[in-house]
Length: 184
Image (cartoon, rainbow, N blue to C red; front, side, top):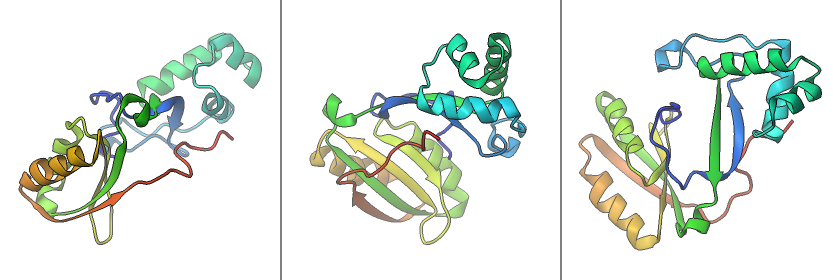
């Protein structure tokens, strides 16, 4: 995910829950700018599900839940965060803030412009997600806007002005069946 870097600008439209996220088995590869792979330990395998249930749990509660000392839990969580294997994210329901339109944007981008366009889109407050894909389209984004007019303006004026976009399809999101990773 290109926009998953923890230093990216945060938008108030990215969700309602605080959740813990970590790679399966190892952190993202260094080639993506996320540091070297981090092998998961037995403690990690206990901590990550506990954090997925309650990302705000205090160190003493986590230590009790996983059966390790508070200092070990604190130290390991600091290591995982420092290596960027673990990131915390706040999700807020966009509709509660007056953003009623969400849309998938499927983009076919000239390969030599893929990274530049992805980085450009991550800077836009309208994008909640930007990621490179394979298949008919090689870039996907989720745009969150106040209304259909704002989405039209974003797509017609902003995205269409980017050099290197060969094709774009938009798919309005009408409802979600699931937005977060499983708690277990």
